[in-house]
Image: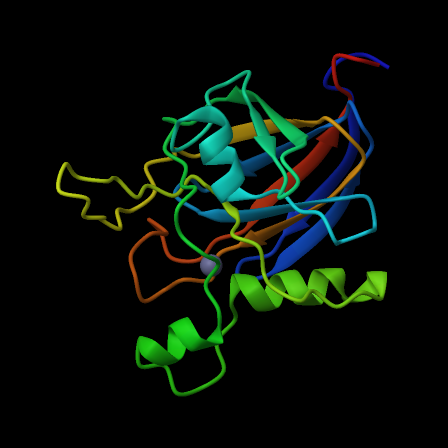
Length: 206
Ligand SMILES: [Zn+2]
């Protein structure tokens, strides 16, 4: 098959998460068709969820806050898992902030049930029959959290325009979960929670 031949297309409804399997060499493309929607992306090696993409290990591996195109994300065992291969957005993605979870929304004053990226991840993985001991820190695509010289963080609305996409290539067989972040109390989603599109496409190795 040719590079970028579509293998699977999954719509991630607003506030929900979805799982795709990625054979080594294939690519996963995340698109914000509306623009301005943050996605929390998690990756694990195969169905054995004991090894995961690690934001902290990736920062140490690269000496950068986020990989540049051509650079790799690594796992908690410091093995490459995904390569960033293409980015049509303004390139603002976060590797510092943990997934939103029920405690985060309670702290923001929410008293009724509220969807979260952590719960979306657990729901997406439920079919694999394994329980996650901890929720790994995600790759927050299209999420703009600049660091100022004094070390302060700002939570800015996503600058990704409609149709912006980011593409990763699997270095090894992976399970990838993408959550369309349901955050509606902190203004990171420029248009409020919106859907995302996740596509698995053929990579350059095929
Ligand atoms: Zn979230």
